[in-house]
Length: 186
Image (cartoon, rainbow, N blue to C red; front, side, top):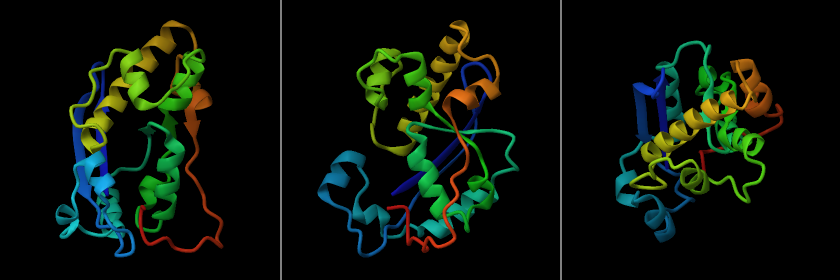
C-alpha cells in the first residue's frame, strides 16, 4: 500500500532525501478494516494512487547505480517484492540488501524475538509514533541499523561493509524466467 525510500549518511544517519508514495492495490485486493487499523491507510486514500509499476519506475528514476545497500527489517520480504517489479525498477532490483533481522540475530542470539517492536524496545530506540506507516517504520529501522552497526563494531563482529554483507547481506533476488508477472506488491 506504500513505498518509501530514505537515503541517510554519516553519524546520526542524517536524511539526504526521501521518496514516499501510496500504491493502489489491484481491484481484487480490497483494503480491509484490519489494513486501515494497522496502517491508517484507507481505501479513499488509495483511490487516486498510482499502481505499483508506475510507483516503482518513479522511484527507480531517482536512484543512482548502486554503491550502497538497501537496509530493511526482514529484507527477504522486500527482496521478493522488488524482484516481482524488477522490470519497472532495474536499478533498485540490482541493489544488494542488508537485513536488520539477520544482523540482530547474529549480535543478540539470546533474544527470543527479533521483530521490529522487540528491537526498538531492546535497543531503546524511540518507538515510531505511527507504527506500520512507511516513514516511521523506516526511521525506526534506520536507528536500529545504526545501533547494530555500532554495537557489532564494538564487539568485533564487523568492521567493514563486506563484513556486514557476510553476516546480514542478501543478494538481489532473481526470479526464475518462468515466474509470471505479478500485478502488484500485495
